Image 1: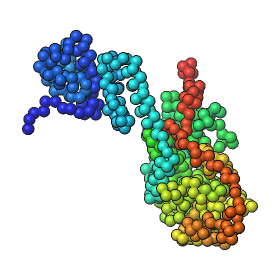
Image 2: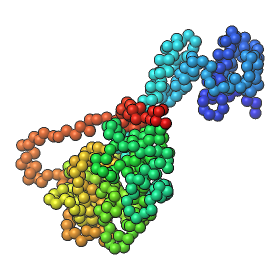
Image 3: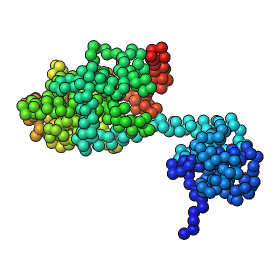
Image 4: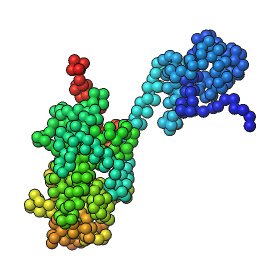
Length: 507
């Protein structure tokens, strides 16, 4: 095998010196000494064409050639291998070369611009600036609604496959909340949450001017987590918001580079917060005791750990399958029948579109999630058995009227009146309070004849004699929010941080 004399490889691949910077330093020193490629080639015994490849970052020179070049240019080898560009122009030339070798530029199908000495500096500045803006916009992870729905569906199916249980996160949450002083047996206090944040180097502050586009803002530089003021003294939703802000740091999250990554991070921080507010040991002990008494109820779980009904229902999905052996489903449904959020590992036939997404789909009119809206008294839970093509299910439903979800965000098409459902297959209803309900309905959905298609007599009478004015759902026209943190107004957030940052005189 012939000995290797030179190697051609992309610059900056991490396998050795940065070839672009090395080449520009050699060119800078050569021109500063008034040498042509031919003259330098004669001094080091190499062809000018080879030196040109080296200067353009397309060849890695042998160590012997580096030594000869350093001697000919009157510097040490270490000076040639420095990772700093020799001057501003060289820095821009390197940036332009790298940008034009990147996949983003290749996808544009445009001819490359050679950063020669004849290229004016202002033009070079502009080209590099444009490439940086292209890269920045690519990193903002702009997703189409279809991409977001597919990503959300993948997450839901992943959670379903593992019973919505993340053991590593449970361990981490229980350890941290225990270190912060939680002794078990009830709700986690605001003070405990504050101590947990302090143990990680953060102070929780409540403000009245939080940017409208953000639920919380974390000042990484000064170790501050800003939360909105509580509308009700001791508002429990603020504990969850604080824990979600902390979770980004605890879980080692980096700025999301795609909408799918953003959604996954939201799932993870929500899970971590719930695992802190209803720590596994205490929560499982409570639920196991109630199961033995055949008196499981979301409302008792909610009140014991100081959660919202929705948060308690979702937390039950984390623990029931893994620790109680109970498969189950969870639904949040608007009073128009649209499914806002859903989870099922018990075979419930959730409505879905051709991509597998469930969000925005109408649930059967016969399901308990919609039947509950017909009651006059909505203060207590509603119980119902429903016969479906996949079997019989028992459900407990609580209705409410609130414009935001349990995490403090706008609920979109789930805003206004909504219902929260937790249900199980018939065989597991025996463990729950309300199992003796006489209410039973038959659902044949997804058969359109069940509840989606009007009776033939009404259709014949009114199909040609009616013209309703449809209510426009504006969200179908809106693009997904842009940005690494979609929908967040960076200008507002940065101005807010500047306004609240501690001043030097504050110590």
